Length: 138
Image (cartoon, rainbow, N blue to C red; front, side):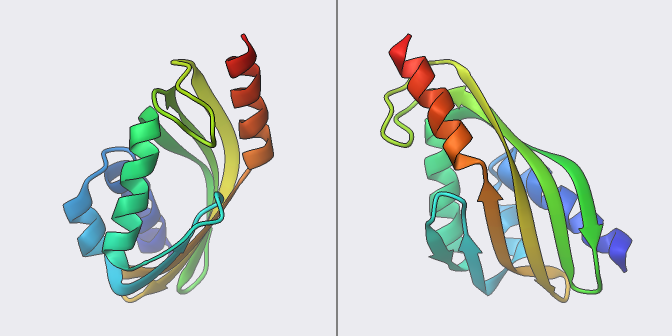
């Protein structure tokens, strides 16, 4: 079963986050999906998550989530991640700089059957804020 969980996580990042495919997101997420992002925001249901995803893609062009490692159990998965994108819109209070930003993080998934019912993402937001501050000062 762990291979199917790994495949689900890989598909979530490749098709949902990296390609911003909202239809796939709606199919992969349970109707009561709970999301807590490293920016401290909580969103419920597929539509709540999709709104958040849209805001990230608006601020970070070519946004990509790269999976560095995955560990799975029966219905849970954890992934060590690298997040990156081109700073093309206001983000964390900093006007667009056009520069690429990158930060590390981790994602913790809970599955219900073939769908994701909860996701908690922790990222190095302090490091990201420092990058943005340095870019804004240039």
